Length: 168
Image (cartoon, helix red, strand yellow):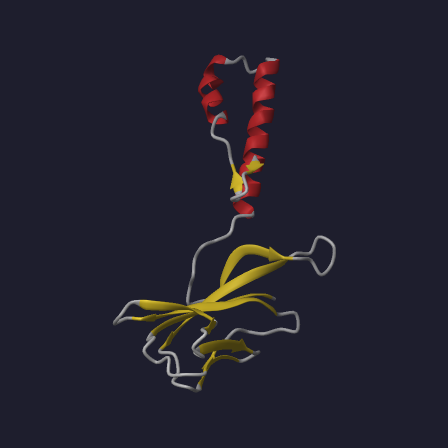
């Protein structure tokens, strides 16, 4: 197993060795070595699968596969992601959307972001958004709601997705 900078990498070269399984004497040292390598390979695969990030962006709470630093030794906190379809950005106003996430005293927001699309022109902006012309959209979250605060008329952006990532 190796970390190639883009995540966990599992080599596939070991699988070619399995083609010789029927040829090796089960009482031989070579067979025992092969079983040891197979065990290590399966262990590496389990570690890689258990540490991968899950790329689903769901409208329901979804475990991402990420873990936030521990509050106690060896006690990493699992992270969750939930997406929200908002509709249109507000026209110089604050839009309040209940998020319905069950909050606890240990909840910690990790990522708050999104994107808005004008479905007529297909123009898009990241959220939060700030431009030199004074247009801006802020995203705030508390224990109950998501607040989208627009400093100008951004209502032409009528397909909006907000993503909240958090640990509990």
